[in-house]
Amino acid sequence: MGRGRLELKRIENKINRQVTFSKRRNGLLKKAYELSVLCDAEVALIVFSSRGKVYEFGSAGTTKTLERYQRCCFTPQGNSIERETQGWYQELTKLKAKYESLQRTQRHLLGEDLGPLSLKELQNLEKQLEGALALARQRKTQILIEQMEDLRKKERHLGNLNKQLKLKLDAEVQSLALQDLWNSGAADGHSNFALHAPQSNHLDCEPGPVLQIGYHHFVEAEGSSVPRSMVSETNFERGWVL
Image 1 (cartoon, rainbow, N blue to C red):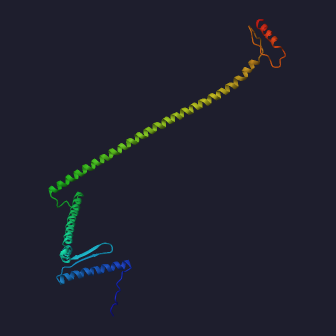
Image 2: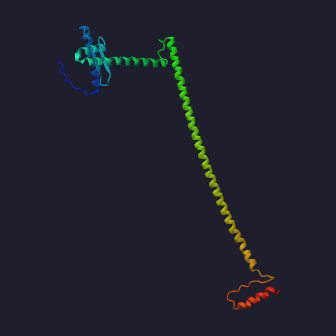
């Protein structure tokens, strides 16, 4: 019993899709190879996977077959397009060669694949490494100098800030000292007044003999009934009479 017809549509299962792609890709490449051998045909096959990987086969070289295809497909009116395409291909070839040369040089600078190099090439490589090392050291020294200068600037800034804080602290200490001195002086003044006030009152109130020579102004007491003229005369007499 034969197998039924397979419906051609996208396989939704990712694993099944990958397995099917691998099997059919290998079969397609095998068929292309068999066609080129059995029929002496020039076959070129290019396949891109969904992940971007490329698989190709060319019996005479994929690039050569593509060039032949371009020459066959373009009409004489399209000579400018063909020349432009050839120019692009030449540019691509140059860029590819330059890329390979740069990769080879990079490997040499890393110390890899030095076997095929001659003595002169090794000497040139040594000079390049010495020059690169000198430039790296120069750049390193410049960075260190810049960092030291930045540190000096920060040090000066912190020193100035420290001086300002010190002056401010000294001013506050002096202010507190003056305030304490003022408070202590005020406290001493109140205590001295309290101690000496009773003594002065005691002396003022203590009776004793008084010697009066000369004229003394007599202050009239409040509520006194003595006439002012008599007070004046009495003061005068008292001023000269012992």
